[in-house]
Length: 93
Image (cartoon, rainbow, N blue to C red; front, side, top):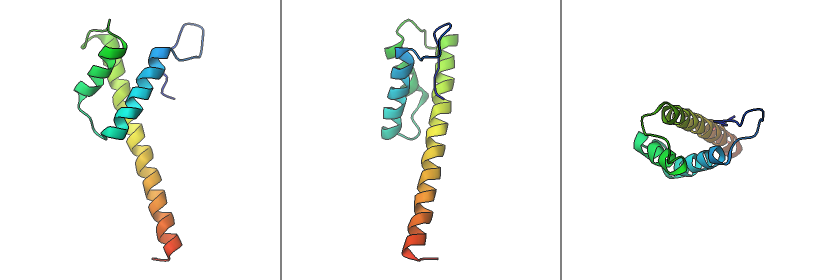
């Protein structure tokens, strides 16, 4: 779902892609709405050859924002479900 770049002819994500996703997940645990500079810092550390405003870097920035939107949406859905279950279990309705 969050695979960013694939090796030609394979369906496996590269190590850098997996590292990028893991860094995004860790960042999400610390901040729900980080600045773009935080994403740029991660990209620069994983792919030092990318220039900050290059096409490749822009693609990863876009993907980072989409991942965070997805993470937030999933968190909100799960929290709402837990709240509904809690209300139902406690008989507050």
